[in-house]
Image (cartoon, rainbow, N blue to C red; front, top):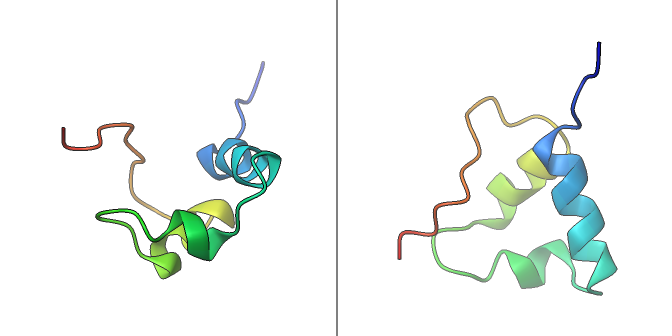
Length: 54
């Protein structure tokens, strides 16, 4: 059985792949550095959405 990666693993690869820091990415709307860090570290216990509220 295949276990898909945690969303934080994918997001972490993307963030560091574009040469940004967690702080730079968290400057966006509706995002805090604390919450982004929890997601990246696999400690976020809620669902992660791709909906940006647009």
